[in-house]
Image (tube, rainbow over all chains, first blue to last red):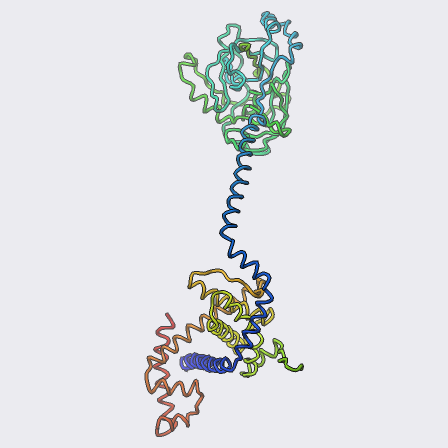
Length: 337
Length: 195
């Protein structure tokens, strides 16, 4: 019974449409098409003005398209060229390496006269051209700083917080990551220190991590603190961190440490266009660079990084006290042009 | 009522008239809105006949919704008809690889209305399919079944009239015949439709 209803309904619907179509046909036949056309024309009149514009558009659109394309290409082309020119020139301006031209602080160098070895006197007579910071990787004298500090150096000296000066040999440089490895034990005056107190953290640190640094923007060691503000460095450089920390020329090469006293990076530069935007090479790349040092450069003295951090539970003040003996000022002498 | 000026029906009057099967209402629907569609279609590379076909189809959509009591009008009837015609014409144009029309009227822009019209047209397509299938099934059914069913369901002849027309001995006999035809039609129709 149900089936019957279903097909009947379909038939009725079918019939209804047929009859409606027939009615429509009849109505259409009775239509006064002339009147309809006339009325349709009134629509045309309404859009007459736009119609004229449309006609013009239709006639000239290819010409217009060519002209517009040429204009667009010229405009954006020149903007692009200008921008790329500007950027290539800004790049160097915006990223400032934090090595310090010593000339400006000549006078303060007189303090070094107290130096027992008398080498400090030499320095004050013939001051270095460039200075920066650096820190020990191992207690037996392997040392890291920025490549841009020691680049084209004739001789490199490091000076401890107490004012002791040692001559350093450049073991290896990694210009890509702006790292330079030095060795202090060439100098017989250098005594092996107790194990370095800080550890090295190769895993990426979290944003917002409280960080601090020690360095030599002036003759005295200077402490600075801030936080990790981005996982990438200048222009998205993934080998560096962006750090919100106040650093100055001379801070370059200093260690960047987290709360627990792990070295998470090496201060390398800052952005000149904005305040408090500094960059640090990630420890990860420090270790990578270490592994690429050829064995003969090490002269048989293996470079083993301290993995054990002995400062984890110390307060910040205590941490600084412990590690400041391991952070040195780097002084570089170059040919005078 | 002004002289020389045909009265303009309201949407309600038009729809009620359409539901009641009034030819006046149909005439009025043509008078009031066909020029708009005529202008639209002829302005978008269609002929006068295309315009008639499109408008006819739109009226079928409207009629079947009204008859089924399922018309939900969330905009003016004029906008509804224009939007439906526009969609139908766009569909035809797309078969000629054209996908743009120049509007002569503002089509429905309200999301609800657009969705509504989309649904209505989907429904219409489904009914279209049924319609074609039914025509096809009736064709294949052959005589005398086809005429018998058409007379009863479409022309609405009475059983008595059919008995006489086909020369059956009595109305019961005609009824049995009709039932047999209907069952055959059902098989033909649903074997295709249910797929």
